[in-house]
Length: 387
Image 1 (cartoon, rainbow, N blue to C red):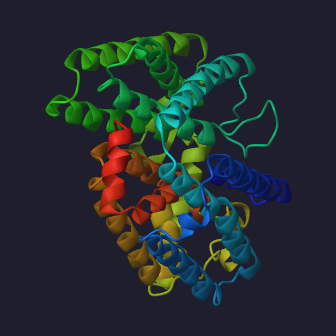
Image 2: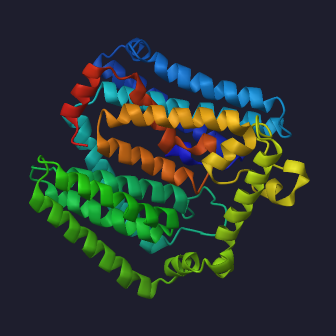
Image 3: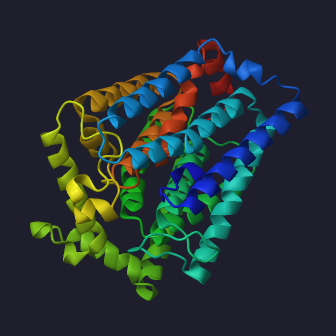
């Protein structure tokens, strides 16, 4: 999840760069052990799709940067995109290329174990500061990044358990239970709403699919109900998260009980849209939201926390149309692989509507890796995974 870190401090950049280098070293070592020639990764029949998409975004960023009022910050954003997004795309492609049952087992063991440990640590440490910028430390975490992990884990395990025929269903259900609790205790309202929104199509698809195991569907629903009851009981002792939910419900006159985070988002959306109205074709330039017209708000808040408004404000109609083309293209690719994969993609897009900026949306851009797959590779991938 290093690609989700959106702080523009030297420390955050060093963390991202270090993780990108570490990821590259791990892949090189793994490829050496498996005797996989990494040149094959860049020479796939449709790997040029990845290059064209990345180059397209970089060209858009660089061209609009030329009229940005914050060229140094725009360059910083491009650098973060290169360090935080591009390595994740190719790492994902490598994992797809080398996928096997052992890797899948390790993946499930890792996310379930992490889900359980995270919930225990969060209850004990209470590491989230919901109204401030997160600080990289052992006891202060980003509730946004954690909620991304929790919701994706929850959806993957839910999708899995509905079709699972093995003997580890209890282990998977523990991960499902704890990840649902994790979504709640993260306090991220977009995460909680996302859990409701995306659980529904997952269940519906499973009910309509003849390959699903109907008793597992009912079992999964029981686990979800149990997790929801736990969250309700927990809310009686820890009232911070429930207060955030109550604030969201107070939408009359858009006051939200004076919730600082929500009001800040609304101000950011308003400024971004006004920037688009002033620069409708090419936007105010990449990175141009920061310190726009010397506004105090844009000096302290460097982006509007909505990917569509960010494209509109900084790259105008041209940039937003390219982004929409990118989304439609990815939807067309992913729907041929699995409807569940499409749901995970929309989950990444959902998060991008409420938090962080373009170079921090690794959960969305990672799906670019699937554009390199041929029809034969898609069939082989389907045989390996149940999503």
